Amino acid sequence: MTNAWNRQQLGVVSCVLATAACATQIVPSEGDEVNVPGGVGGASAGTSATGGTLGAMTSGGATSGGGTNGGGTNGSGTGGDGATSGTGGVAGAATPVGSAGKGAAGGRSGTFAMGGRAAGTAGTGGASANGDGNATGCAKLSVPMNGANDKAHFVVSLRSAADLSAAGTTISMRVHVQDGVGGVILAYAQDSSFNFLGPATKPLLAEQDGWVTLTWDIGAEPAAQTGIMKRSISRLGIEIKAAPSATWSNPTVVYVDSISVNAPALSFPFGTTGTVSGMAQSSDVAGQVLWLNSGTMDTTATGTTLSWVATCP
Image (cartoon, rainbow, N blue to C red; front, side):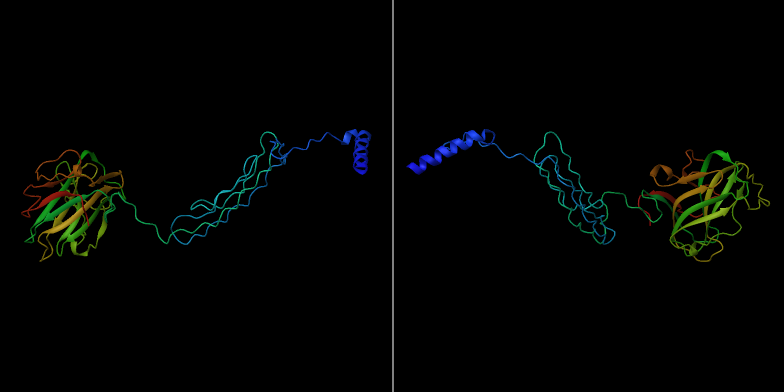
């Protein structure tokens, strides 16, 4: 008892001598509820995370790349894992906000992103482009040829006359000969008086393979004795003719995507149903559509037809 009392007195004397270092201590009994203040967090924010590694491209599939990482703001945070697209992860910079709190943990480095698949899959729902590059359709010319005098004329009547006399002026037509073992195909022009001018060299139907563009230099073509006024062209046409061959496809079938002129710039695509007139006529058809001239001097092949089709070769 004496020793215990002495130790207690020595403790009191020590606190009296060093009051700045002592405080009254209350030792709680077992079961008492005690509120103990939490520790004070560090004032500095977490350090920046390391960026993710750029994913390796394996082929033409999706682009690969690590995810973007970043430390948490005024607290713990984690970076993103590698993404399936984008570039390598950017190191996140933690931003301290408000009063000092617990140091923010830097984000994790982005994980290695997987490379793209070997090949992308085809899209769905879109219109499938035909071999003519036209996704919506074309004109179909069907000409039964049984003799050397058989021919057919398909025409676009211009709203106003065009000057096609300049050097270098050309007429082009985009065509696909499906059946044509004999005969020729050519572009031609007519003035308002129906004077006719075509190329001296006429392309053979049998020599056309797949979709081709046939171009004729009308500017350089001699007018000769035709009487045509190349400064005032009213019609552009396509002639399919049996001569000079002796055998033919019956019917001869040709698909036409467009007719165009380079200067002045004129373009007549036949991609929609309204650009082709299915009725054979012997006079001009308005609207700059393709029409079949049934005049006795123009179409002599019996059973010739012109139609618009949604599906082309």
